Image (cartoon, rainbow, N blue to C red; front, side):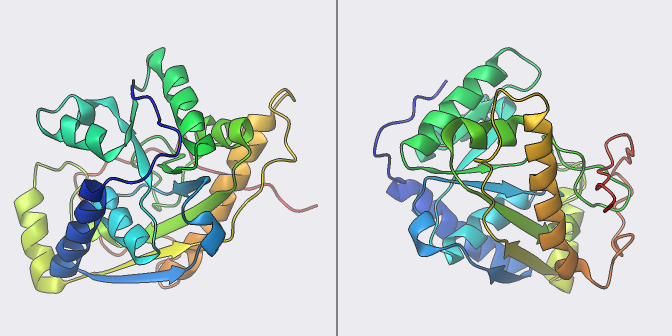
Length: 258
């Protein structure tokens, strides 16, 4: 497990990779970034919580964060770190490994909390996977992001994105060349929006159900930030990926106002 360094600063390699990400996105799509992050939060401590709709998301978010002057450390699946070459680059860039479904998840959360406390910006996907909601709205989240926020007391900025699913298919690398070719011709619009910071310090980690309440607040905020980005696609996306499975078992149901 990677050990965060006190006073950690994004290495030049990661900043250069973000610049490259902007070039890649510009070649395949039209990126529109809206919303902002307060200047005093851009270097951390801060948690960015984003919806996850495509394998292309990390490149889009790397580009969008550079546009807002941030170089976040991504919490990423352990499989990427085990990939020859890529794993070494991700470790060098300061990203954090998560081995889902193992006892290492607890260690990953501790490492992320230490990184945020030391002043890092950490980007998390609260859904824990590429969402499979039939309407491609954020799913019911895993509680790790809320636990992270409660453990270190850092604010959470919801990040919504829409359009990256038109570049890379769910089953990439299968169908990747076809998806990239279509994007080069059509140049879809990819929208990313940074929402208002959330403060979860009113929740006590020891209180029963606090992590679930915090998670629901985070998912609600991402959903609210996403809605304007897909105002003309409120129910179902226009672009349908035939290789994308659908799973309604984790549909996020917002509480009904009394």
